[in-house]
Every structure is written in structure tokens, then in C-alpha cells.
Length: 198
Image (cartoon, rainbow, N blue to C red; front, side, top):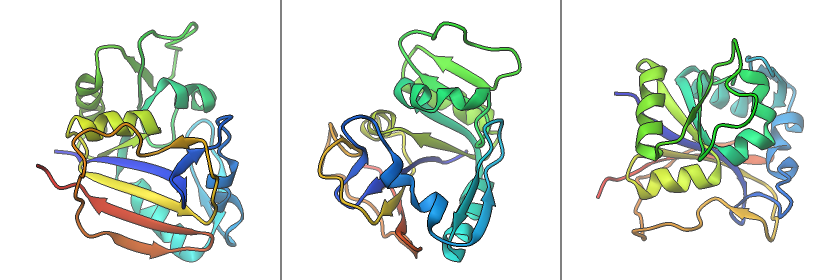
């Protein structure tokens, strides 16, 4: 069965966005931390310029992903990824399907019947590969429901002081994680923790 992996960039003090949903500071390392190019793919393809260790890390991580699960807020901020997410079919957890969606030729799907259904649909679409969970609220829901296998966090070398926290509103804490894999990059440290089941 495919793994369900939380994937987010965050500030050292635990924020994934500033109070106005700005994410530049926590994602800057993708664009100016080195001279190795990494192509994202997808209809909204971007070219990242990262350090060698970060490029190796991203290549390994992205090669194992087959689908993405996220929330409506992330979908809106990302403008629907142009209809096709680079990580594969995207499943957006929402109460209501937005106007104008679904779109022809798009691999973005909307799930209105809860987190368990969203994870199940994303796993099926991933075809044995891992499901990336993105967005603070969706990650929190998966963690609270016991649906995460790993937590992958890219710690950007910045302190935001306020904004959207990645690990807010958690149930059943403390949640003890396994030992992390650690990859130091330039302007970022990549951490990958296995989630221990209760």
C-alpha cells in the first residue's frame, strides 16, 4: 500500500505562511539556494535552483509521488496548479466544488465526503506510489485521523513570528515520531520523520 506523506516547507518557528497567506519566505530556498536546476513538470511547470543536496533530495522525493491531497485554501492560493499538479492527480478536500471545476483535461478532483475518503481516493490514483499531503489544515486532519505514514518538513532558515502554523489544532498529543532522516541544504534543512502508530 502506498505511503501517505505530509510535505511542507516551514519557518524555523513553525509557520508555513505569513498572516496574509504569503509563502515567499518559506519557499525562497527553491529559487535561490544554489545553481542546480530542478524541473517540476506539470502544466504549471517551474524551474527551481537549489543546492546539490537539495536537488538530490527533491529528485528522490518527487520520483516516489503518485498523487497529492490538499485543502481548498492551498488549491486557491496555487490557482489550481493550472489544472494539473506536478505530483500527479490532485485531490482537494472541500465542502463545495468551486465554480468552473472540474475542468476538461484537468487531473484535479474534489472530495466533499471527508478526509478518509480523500486519502482512499488519492491512494487509488497513486497506483502504488506515495500520496503527498500538502497544506497545514489537511496535514493536521490526516495526523489527527491516524492516516499519515511520514512527515517531511523543509525547515527554511527564517523566523516569521506569526502566521499559519503547520502543527496547530492537533489531537492526541504528544505524538512521538521516529528518528528523522536529515539532509542539510543551503538555506534549508530537509527532515523526514516516520509517524509511529499508537
